[in-house]
Image 1 (cartoon, rainbow, N blue to C red):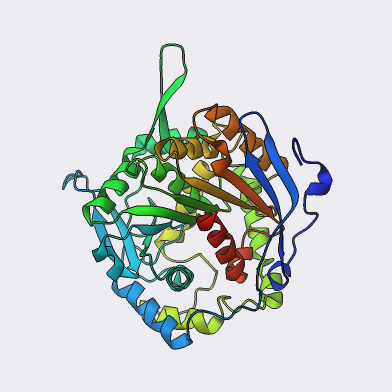
Image 2 (image 1 turned 90 degrees about the horizontal axis):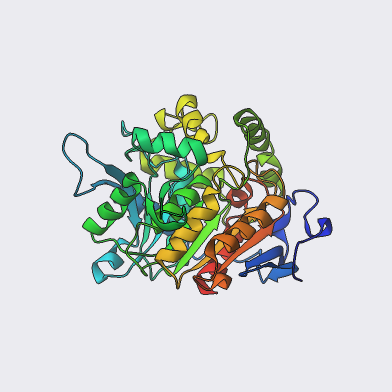
Length: 403
């Protein structure tokens, strides 16, 4: 099917049983130079009963490896008076010594393994990273705390002011006629690229969620040319323009719907209480967080509100998600990018926003690269669906990395 989708191509409500049946029903959108190809009846083969690629004992060892490898890396160009540093960890670390490029995962806003005082923060991130390591045993998996989170340097003041105007984490260079001739990531994003290179980490694949996906698309523009082969951006921000009050309300409302997924999910990879307790113990904490993803200084309301000022801007204000996707594609023309939209996530306002996003990408790219390298998928899930159906996300990630 080609052209604009009709209402019947939208999912009518969240499917809390989505990961319990096969195949996975999706709506697939592919960007072309003058239109968006839409397949409202696409599907992916999926085994909802596939057993984990690890035993619980092996999972515990892998989480221990991830915790032991946590470190802070520094941009070699930064000064002692103004250091730019980033908290990272690595799974399958032994492969870095063989020169194997990594899969990179940037944390979401307000999320990190540890805060700046060394307190354990998000054990779910450690488990998700371990799952990725077992799923991709021939690749090192690098987790980075995104700028302003954990032990990672925040955006510079001027960068923050720019980002709060239109959501972009990159700058555009224009010629005398006003035409964009170049894109350049913020200096803080470039600093991360340099810090990774300085410790011998190359990146060939990206897999990030939500606001981490927005940081990742900006980072693509700063990584060495033609180094990225695949990018998987799940639940990206900056698609819909949302008022902060409405966005906060929608987010809180969705937090309370998590119980529906938790009760219905039969996913063998779901983050069970036992797995979370194990990860907390290894990370150095025996205290369960009272509110999911709301602990320590990385999750204080002031910091979350500060970051929301960046991520609430969408297609109508700056077109930041589309612009950054294009900037990354121009830096890596052969890369294939897959964007996944859980249609009922709190940061999205309307299914029309997804199609508008793809249309903007098409307009910006012109005839510079093969647009069919960029596609998006819609699912009938909410914001936290992937937390309760990790195998769904894993299936989509594998599709992205192999298409």
